Image 1 (cartoon, rainbow, N blue to C red):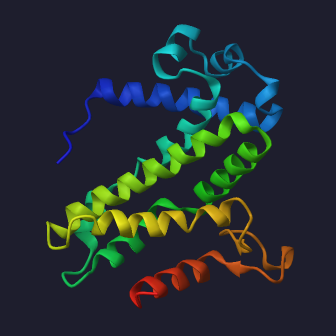
Image 2 (image 1 turned 180 degrees about the vertical axis):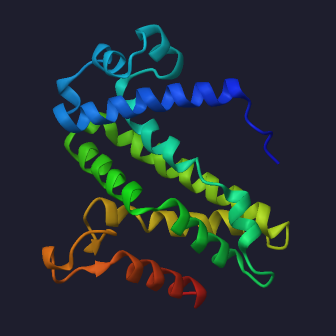
Length: 205
């Protein structure tokens, strides 16, 4: 079990998030080529030295905005609320519903669109999904208590999180929560996609 974060830990996390949020907002407003690290620290009211304590570049700060969002879920509460006969798929489904709020999905799609426009961001997409996947694997391992073969939770999390990439980069026609059907009448809703994906997993493809 992870130790309870100290006040110092929480302060460091808040500082990193404030810098990351400022970087993301500037990226949306001005594009990755339209701002520098000095603009980020000015917007967030920190020093350049503070920025250097957390990030090596502005691209890393933009990516951390999503990684920070993704790591804030209370997984212990999620596991506590699952029924006794729940399967790892049930646990993963509930975790996805917790992680992928409409606000988070919308901002994540913005990040993917930015990365498509600015190649310097592309390597960080993998970092975001890798962090999400690791969080899911840890949750599943905590849930399963060794009841499943080694590698099972990795395979399961990899299959599910990999299925989100084509939604976010636009290769699959899926409406995010909050988007109107009128915008694209041929699109599938996010919940429909999620449920169909889990139906495949339940049935073993």
